[in-house]
Image: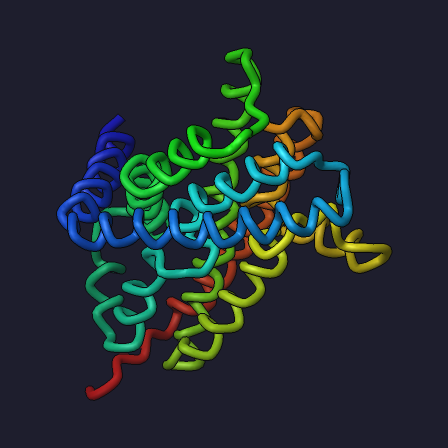
Amino acid sequence: MGSGRLYAAVAMGGFRRYATYRAATAAGVFTNTVFGLILVYTYLALWDQKPHLGGYDQAQAVTYVWLGQALLSTLAIGGSGVEVELMERIRTGDIAIDLYRPADLQLWWLAADLGRALFQLLGRGVIPFAFGALVFPVALPRDWGSWAAFTVAVLLGMAVSFGIRYLVALLTFWLMDGTGMTHMTMLAGFFCSGMVLPLNVFPGALGDVVRDLPWSALLQKPADVLLGEADPWSTFAFQGAWAVALLVAGRMVQSVATRRVVVQGG
């Protein structure tokens, strides 16, 4: 019970921390809305030429765009989650202080990232999505069951996203500078999550591969649940399997990395 309260407090602290950046949040809402508009008109032109591309009609394609803008920062698809701070703490050696805490390192950062993600969803994701739903024809379910399933899919997506970024952050123990890995992860996140184009559009073997990668659990899978294009339970199983695999892998890498902590500068 005490540990549960500890990690709940860490999550709440992460939420409050990001809530203090009001100007950055407002700028993010504006940016997401503008990029959403650009993508919507691009998608509309594409779907005019290719109706039902990827199995979506135009309303579903527009909905997909605004879901992407709502989940972009929520799931840190392009990076910029708590892993940035974790990598810096590893590089400077401050991670040694974290290891002395009476708390699990992975669970601590997972809780902090969940708090960040919840704030980004409420503070930065809801407004662009609501704007898109009001201005453009969208395909949204009318039953609460679909929305509940979508919420579960987003929560599982948070776990998968953290698992990916935590593994990348731990590589700083060996690389000492994670900039290159961060950029590679960002590109993979945008391309393989479906942020650029729905993964259903990708043809042949390429489509089969990207739909089986963990990044598809971030946007494509939750979107298909909300749009009624995927079975919720099989989606949960896919996301849950990747979440467990990534978190276990992170635990193993963490165990190896923390056996010998190198503090730069002494």
